[in-house]
Image 1 (tube, rainbow, N blue to C red):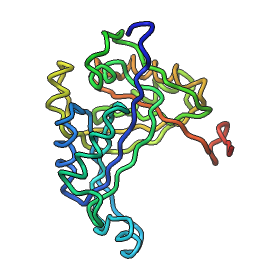
Image 2: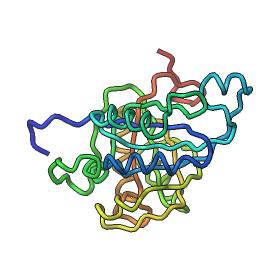
Image 3: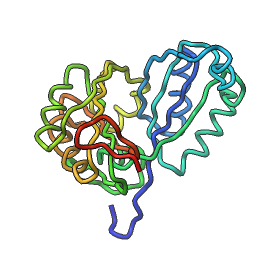
Image 4: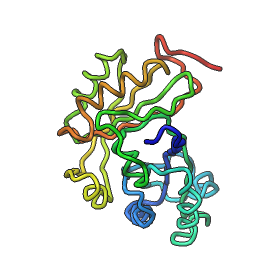
Length: 233
């Protein structure tokens, strides 16, 4: 990346739609060259009146997480409105969360006009006190992630099972095979610990390892119930 080139802003886009429509969300994203997606299966817990008000009337849900540069968000939202009419009740909801750190390889995938970045780097966009690190790896590599994270100061993590979708274009770009069955490891840490933890994980379980790990981090403002990290601003 050029020294005078501004750091591109990346956002996590969360889309909640009725079960079976997650693949359609992935296809819309792929049209905009947004090829990194993760699919979760969700279940609504509110009563039907509240679900209907939120526009997510059916209880069984597909939750699609997509990474996107900020400048593509308006295009993406427009496509959701045009192709899925997502603004209408019952069609779903979409929201974004800012990302504060990411693998260099994923940054290149999201911004093809960026110059080559070092393979072991983690792009740092941090300006918060606390961070949530999400590591998406092939099934069976959560212990590798946690061992690396703890070696850099992490206290613990939460493991979530998931499934990746829409990987064909990502595989072409990166030149690696990406399996569908995924594990997500969520780690809370202090701001000053985040970068070293991500570097350690990226070294042992990054995209160029058998774990095929995708790393992102996002800001956390309020934390309660975790020893050493508690804060309510």
